[in-house]
Image 1: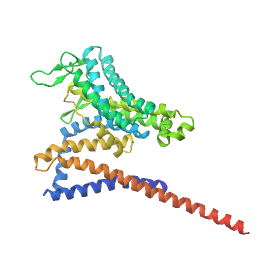
Image 2: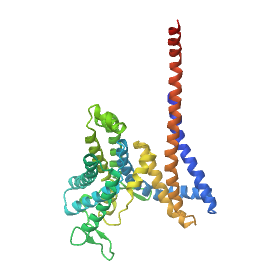
Image 3: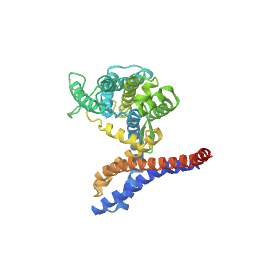
Image 4: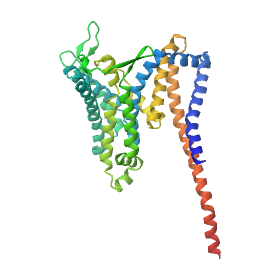
Length: 367
């Protein structure tokens, strides 16, 4: 019964969030004069087309890695809002290194990937150091580091430094990575699925194992629950904060590797931004669980892929953003409500179990 009760409440929160989101968005659509049922059918049909599914899966990989990077910080109660800067700087430096070398494939690809991981970790460790040594909020420092990373990339990407001008366009890009540094894609459903998806799966498995089956993971979770208690029990809490931020940045450095190694083979200013807020949102939706983050990442990519279709059919594409924002708020709220309900149930069970013992003690005192 206890397992059934936990399973029920675990499903109740996300289902309630989805239902609330659908109702709220339906009201907005009716106010705009659009049919909610037709809009939802359009989103489902367009997003489920085979060629769109492949694009969604590729986008899911990037979103998933950003979500895992944010989730590691959440376990330590750290908000790594610097994922965007860490990812962009990591991909940029990795592209420069890849374009400047021409090693065999079994060396070239690992070199590019490791470069991205190291750069992301080093850039994130700046915020970790400031947090530990100067008690500066990681949110503030990461916002500043995002801006610095953007300026640094624009400066280094100029022709004559590390960048090249892309033909007839004004877009600046790094030199092309040789074919030995490319990762293959799989031809499925009329599209190209990046093989980097397997790396993302490995990252998710490693994240779960380290967090739940290792001493480091226990110390990380303990420090996140109570900084002072962990420190009193012998855990080097400041060191754990620093390492956690660096690990978060390392995974953030992998975020754009699928796009770089399997599609563009060069870094340009056209690379997408905004992964920081998306990663934080997906970590919240997925409850920092690797499977939950994967589901949330696919849902996010599915909605974004359907946005252009809405615009073409007279429905504002901003409805997708509204759905994303509403589902986040609804999920956080529903989980908090469920948490309070389950806590009250536990308190009642404890009270019911203790009542006979209290009565027995009271009778003994009277006698």
